[in-house]
Length: 131
View 1: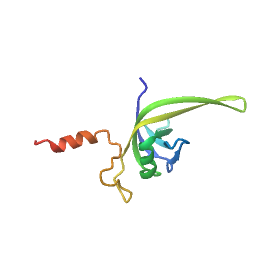
View 2: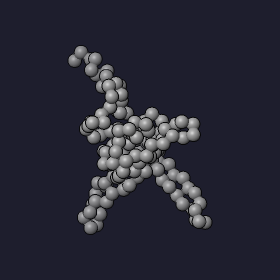
View 3: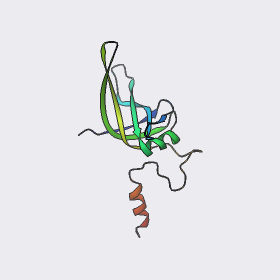
View 4: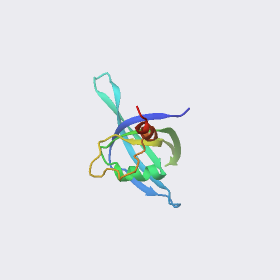
């Protein structure tokens, strides 16, 4: 099983692009502070590259910005390439879902638009329950 869940802050504004086929792809880096301190008593931070595709990518490009807090669930992907005669490796997170964790501001979602909330369907059902 290859599944990760991450919560962190964007290090810079996301980069939104389209492939030649018109599919949206959004890339950003998530800064995630480790839970425990190192031997010097400092908490270290990991900087993980995130890639989001299609409609969720379009929303990330529109609503996220530098410093935004986000939760990402997805899988780890490693790829490699040759540069100057040496093999380079890149590890990225391919996001299945991105949850926006900041409070809504001037760029809040429009009426009826979802921010990718995993539980949005359940919330709608709960609202209809008589108890």
